[in-house]
Amino acid sequence: MDDKWVDSINDLKIRREEALNAGGTAGIEKQHSRGKLTARERMEALFDDDTFVELGSMMTSSATDFGMEKKRKPGDGVVTGYGYIHGRLVYASSQDFTVGGGALGATHAKKICLAMDKAMEAGAPFVSMNDSGGARIEEGIDSLNGYAEIFYRNTMASGVIPQISVILGPCAGGACYSPAICDYIFMTEQTSQMYITGPAVVKSVTGEEISAGDLGGAAVHSSVSGVAHFVYPDDLECLNGVRRLIGYLPDNNESEAEDVYGNSVDNCSSLPEIVPSNPKAAYDVRDVIASFTDKGSFMEVSAGFAKNIVVGLARIEGKSVGIVANQSNCIAGSLEINASDKGARFIRFCDCFNIPLVTLVDVPAFMPGSNQEHNGIIRHGAKLLYAFAEATVPKVTVIMRKAYGGAYIAMNSKGLGADIVYAWPIAEIAVMGASGAVAIIGRKAIDAAEDKEAKREELTKEYNDKFMNPYVAASRGYVDEVIFPEETKTKIYDALKALETKSQDRPYKKHGNIPL
Image 1 (spheres, rainbow, N blue to C red):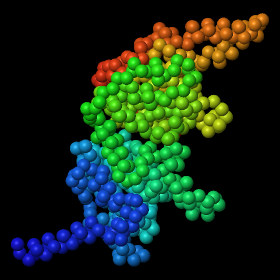
Image 2 (image 1 turned 135 degrees about the vertical axis):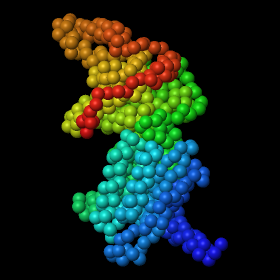
Image 3 (image 1 turned 60 degrees about the horizontal axis):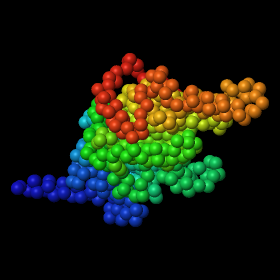
Image 4 (image 1 turned 180 degrees about the vertical axis):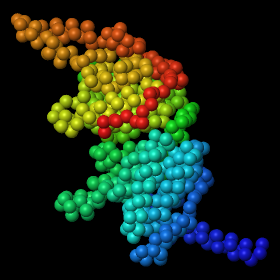
């Protein structure tokens, strides 16, 4: 080997070492002291062992204003590349807080955009790990344009490849909108914050004093705002959660999720014990889900937000399915603004990526009251209707106990486009409950009766006998079959199997106008 080779190889070794330790030992120690992994440690945790391949490690900023030429670091504060999760190709970016606080400049943004472009070209999921102080002030408008370039790609990739955003530190200002466009947002309990304006700005503008955690921490975004879909204690568990989610998803919108061998479960014979026949008695619908999905496979989405509806991914005989279910132990499973948004967003995600939908219905109504009306329940409820009607994936509905009025329609009814609708024999399908119906249609008869209470009971029994059962709906074809509870898994599985070749063609249109 001649001298030129020796010098070139030594130079490359030095440059690689500089790129790997751009934040310095002190920066790495400070990151660890906050309970956070470094950008590269996160990449290693996300991907299968020894599969991460870095791209652009020596790219640097070209900015010169405000002494930036002296602050340049290889990699420019973000690690990008690809690797494999469960043997499947995935692209990712990971902001490096040890280098200039992970602030985003033009080159930083360019690296992320290049990785996103590669993900789109390969038809592979993209994971972005956020840990940044925000836009790099020294680069001014170039930083802002960098965010715009990322947002544009987020939007173009939406519905084409799965996009997952992982908040592992601060994410402030305009930077929040990239995660918001992604399909799912993960946060950690102690180190994640997301907010458009931080506590200092809030105080100066409004006078309100609030901590960063109370303003935009994981607890707030997972239960109050609904921005975050999954929360984990720390970086490592959070990234393991991302790996788990990837396992349910296809690579892109032209493929299907891979079948995974699991522990098949059929505990549907216990359903009469889980679900009381009294329509006013509460139970946990997640116990129903567990009775027919593969053991331990249900991954609930937005578990802390709009708890009156449960959505999530599961497997039935190894196949990925999306579950949408009313939760009777929270405001009786009524639909309201947040539940409508939560359900609609999840339904549209499943439809984007060819994941069949199973809907479990036990719903009394859309939530009444001036608060709901004034905050737009009509507009928000329409999102749920629209999402179910628009979805072309296989859609199977099980009416478990009650399905009243407009909420019956909204929960993937036959007329809204459900492929197969089943009902249990205790199901009540009507415009409203018997007491409310009798109060309206039997008012004159009750008023004229000598024994008003006896007349009310008589009319209630008559209404129950005639209408509060699934057989009227079955006789009209709105229910395909009334089934025993113990048949639930078999019927769902057989229906989904039969619908695998369902045509998903629709008339051409640029896109609909969902009531946002």
